Length: 143
Image (cartoon, rainbow, N blue to C red; front, side, top):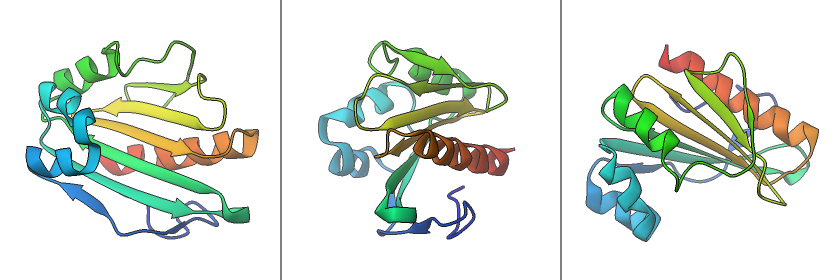
């Protein structure tokens, strides 16, 4: 489900892929943050960092929550739901941009049994466009 190098033009994988198929593996990656995903039916996780134009960095997190209901409940959970959001049309079943952080954008969406987060350390329109491009690429692969 992860975009390949240059699938989003100018972006290449920059670290090794993070994977978790057991709860213990998820705890090694997210420490206490793993509990939230486990409570909502966690099945597996994959994460990848990318480097783009001008040294920009982006991270992709894909959680398989086992069932659409679990992904939806996770998306609506008060611990994952940002205070300031902007909805994104035509992406997954539900999608939003977290407008809260000062220095990054977080694009999140749910589709089928997947909860996906794309985090870009670039709070510009260009950064937002890149995050949404990654999210759309992943969404197209889930179909």
